[in-house]
Length: 261
Image 1 (spheres, one colour):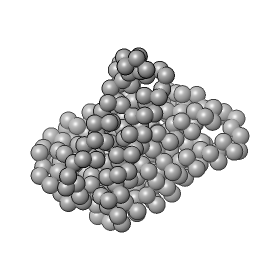
Image 2 (cartoon, rainbow, N blue to C red):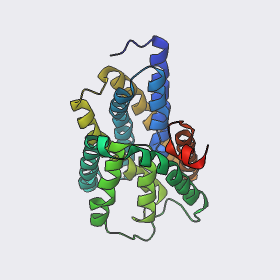
Image 3 (cartoon, rainbow, N blue to C red):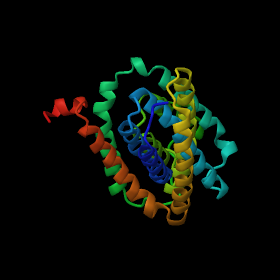
């Protein structure tokens, strides 16, 4: 494990708690924890692997909180979680041959589009609406595909799942959030298996941050259940825009070259 100063460990703990809080409501925890770990001096590959360790705690914490209040049936949704796990594992295993530059360029555009959709879509609430795809087809196609993306790249996974649940599965905002956390848990676990097999995980740091993220997710999920769509919708929009800005600000992002920035 890298020799990390005490004040940097404290920074990682604070970042993990806040990430757990935000991620349990609107996704985007990696926007906080990945830069924090890089600032602390953790190498990029180990940052990705360790991020999966600690993010699992946040996803599990939020999933349990939502399940306890009946917003997600864990037994019924287990097959979908397994499909997300498979997708995450395949994505992490095949990351080296996926055109990462294309993903980096396309991601900001997609995130801005998602933000615009949720910002201006009328009648978004916690009530379920018309379902456009069967649960079987949803679990067989979109779930493993988004899980695969999570293993390959990661940023925006929660936003993609939220968009899919709301627009195709007909879920209300709160129900979509609850189910997103369960599938995030599956894809994170699948990717972690691969990263761990390559020794790209710092377990002590990951577990320490995981404990803090667990606490943050408990606070965030309870707040989301109390306020519902009035909190989830604006926070989701902010997280998507923040992700897009962060990705575009990266000097290595090919979109900057294409746009002449």
